[in-house]
Image 1 (cartoon, rainbow, N blue to C red):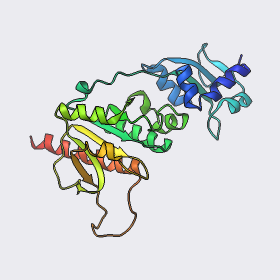
Image 2: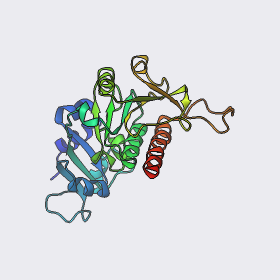
Image 3: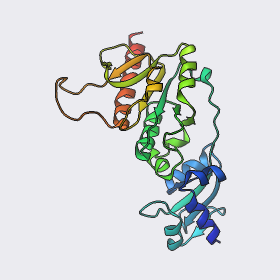
Length: 253
């Protein structure tokens, strides 16, 4: 039986403070929930319309109850309460890999898309400044299309972490309008790629720790058009170029 308290709990999880208090996040849709049930994450409870899942541990909901539970404009056929995973951030374990760092990325849609991109390009960890959008925001979870199950997202002060990564010999890349053409320079197969806020870019405190400034040029190079790329689009272009050059290097060797 679905109670008023159940509905209040689910609705409260739209707020980060409630997610932190209960250590729970919301995931919606049968496909995502099926993936969750097979993943390392612990699903605490599932609400679904009759017939969506053939399992005795599902709370059957009416269409009206799903309307009240859902965080989506168009209510889904199922919703799960999932325990928020806690990952330990160990800089030494990230050496030799490509890692994304997000400096104050605010838009949930951008955040979710970047998590999905990381999954596509085989990037297992994203390190975020504390002010970056919460990866367990319902909008972010939906935008990741299941990638949140495979990509570890960490939150920490970026400056000390980047200093530690540099001390371990890792290159720190960042995207800027005055950087070097990303298509012409050498790129390592590992290191940290920093992406900044939608409007302000990378903050000065983070910028000073960037060892390689990169620029994604327009085409043709002297064309006057948009001032910059959306941060998720820029992340996609940059990750694709890092992986392209890594594949080319492997082929040549």
